[in-house]
Length: 126
Image (cartoon, rainbow, N blue to C red; front, side, top):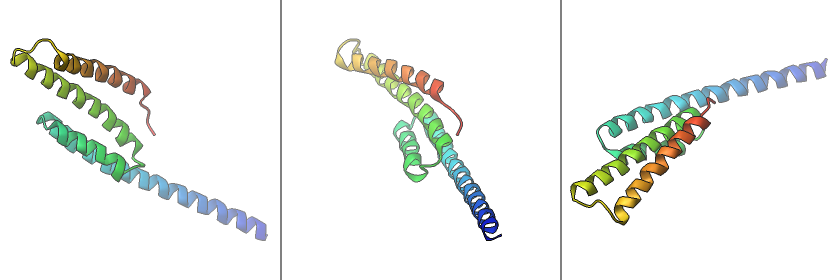
């Protein structure tokens, strides 16, 4: 009888802990997605560095918010593409069409387009 009660108590404790962990993970994801929305707003206002800082803060503030973190990775890839495109466009407007700076901006664009595609393929729900 004692063994039976001990087993039941252990199972109940595990279930309670698991549901508590899940609740904490969901709350972390909600907070993380709130930061994602703020980052999207900054991105749409072309405040790229601010948007990236918000995304990076998710990893530190909410390490268990895996869904929000993966969404942040995709958004960050898009922001990096936009930053490189702005850089390239600025160079072109200055009449600079060749050289290291132009090549670097083009490399960034190509890299982040490939990275975004890869990250989309690897994305999953946690």
